[in-house]
Length: 329
Ligand code: MLT
Image (cartoon, rainbow, N blue to C red; front, side):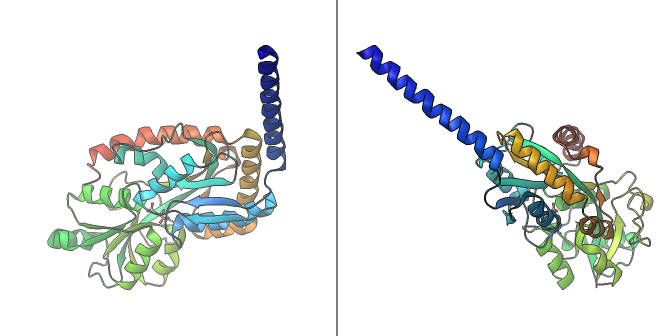
C-alpha cells in the first residue's frame, strides 16, 4: 500500500515535471508572446539610452513584439546589472551595458553579481569614442589653455560624471590623474542630465561619448578639448586627440554588449542574437551611428563568445589601469 502510494506520488511528480519541461520547451518555441524589457543602466536621453532606443525598434520588428526600454539608473550602472542578474531567465528581460560591465569590478569592493558568471552573453553592439568637453563660457579655448586654467583654479573647477562605474567617471579621473590634479567631481544619473547641465553652464567639464555631443560641438554650444581616440574623428576634424596634445596613449573607446540573465534558454538567446544582428544591419541604425562616428562591430563579433572573451580581456586591461590611477578618489 505504502509502496503503491509512493509509486503513484512519484508518477504524479514525474508527470508534472514532464509537463513543466514540455511547457517550457513550448514557451521557448513560442517566445516572445509579450513585450520584452531592454534594461538600460543610465538615465534617459544619454548615450547608452540612445543606442538602446535605436536598436529596440528594429529588434522588436524582427521579434514580432515591442522591445520596451527601461532606465534603471544609479551607482554607475551596478544597480541595473544587479537587477538583471536577479531577473527571471525567460527572455523577457535583456540588458545593454557598456564597458562599465568590465570596470565596475575594480571600482567596487564587492558587487552583488559577477560579470563573468551572472549573465548570458548575446553579442557586442558598437564602439563609441569620447570627447573632453567644456561649457561654452569656460575661458580656456584649447587644451593648453585648459591645463593652465585647471592648474590656476584646482578644485574650483567642476567635472560632471555618471558615477563610479560610468565611463565618464573613468575618462574624467584618468584625465585628472594624468594632469596630477583633483577637480570637484559631480555625479549624475547618466551623462544625459550631465550634458544638459554642461549646456546650461552649471558644470565646467564633462568627458562624454560622441553619441549626442557632435552637433553641440559643431554649433559652438560646448567646447571640445580633445578626443579619446588615437586618430581625429571625421565629424569633428578640428578637435585634436588627447594623445597628440601630450596625453600619450590616452584611449577610451566605449564598447557595448547585450546580455540576458544567467539561465535564459539557448533557443531564446539565439532569437535575440538574430534580432540584434538584423537591427545592427538596418540602414537607419547604421546611418545614425556613423553620423556620431560610432563603429558598429563586425557581424563576427555579434555573438556570445566574442562578447564574453572581450569582457574578460577588458577586465584584465582596466583593473590595473584603474588601480594605478587610484580611482575612485
Ligand atoms: C550614459 O548613458 O549616461 C553614459 O553611458 C554614462 C557613462 O558615462 O558611462
